[in-house]
Image 1 (spheres, rainbow, N blue to C red):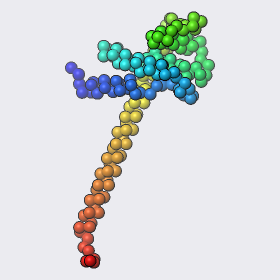
Image 2 (image 1 turned 45 degrees about the vertical axis):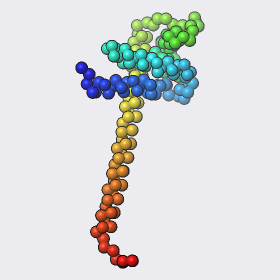
Image 3 (image 1 turned 90 degrees about the vertical axis):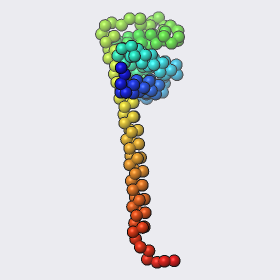
Image 4 (image 1 turned 30 degrees about the vertical axis):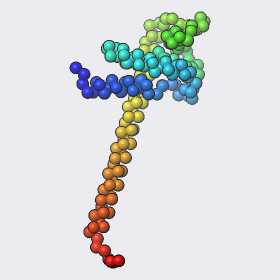
Length: 175
């Protein structure tokens, strides 16, 4: 039996898949992501939502990991393990989205156990970070709406006070 909260969370996840920000490494390289990768991120997020309906734990996607690692590698040199992880998810993403084959000298088809754990931790962190960004945005929008309602109510109250003062205050002059 689904509760109202579960339905609300499901809707939030679908909206998040479409509109959550793409998490990139800070440093100004976020605008260099190719359009096909941005589209792949959205589609992979939707696939992840479908997997979550079947009981899988929500996490970031391979395409999101590619975007993050791409921007990180443009900001500073990454070590051998992270380069392997980057090439692995890039290889998987290229193949999945019909971008052809990665060049043989950088294609990676398998990761070591510890590298796979690092990738899973990265994807979990990416997911938590984008959910937190969505929640903060929602909270800011709710607060803005509250302030707007408060100001409207305050303005209405002030108008009522002015109107009641006009009624109570006798006219000094009749024209």
